[in-house]
Amino acid sequence: MKEFVEYIVKNLVDLPQEVQINEIMGQSSLIIEIAVAKSDIGKIIGKKGKTINAIRDLLKSVASRNQIRITLEIIEEEDK
Image 1 (cartoon, rainbow, N blue to C red):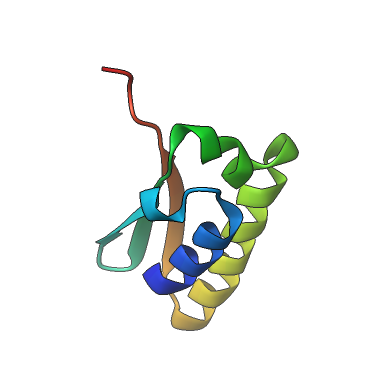
Image 2 (cartoon, rainbow, N blue to C red):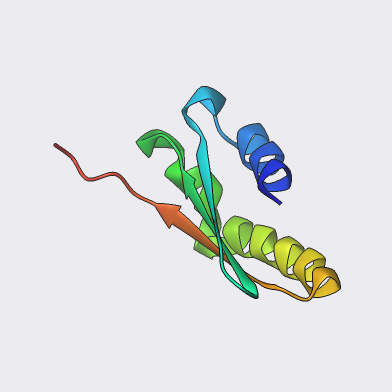
């Protein structure tokens, strides 16, 4: 799943080298965290959240075949 999400996200952003994806596996669930450059967050979310929701829908369809639940989260870095 991580490679699938990474492929999609890196092709959407301007700074693909800044993309970081973390998987947290539970017994029957998977959490995928995406961290991108601050300037690329809008490209991942899309207008009214359409892009991120489309990615989530793709992941849910793949996950249903494997009988697991997937949660996709965007991690925003705080300014230091």
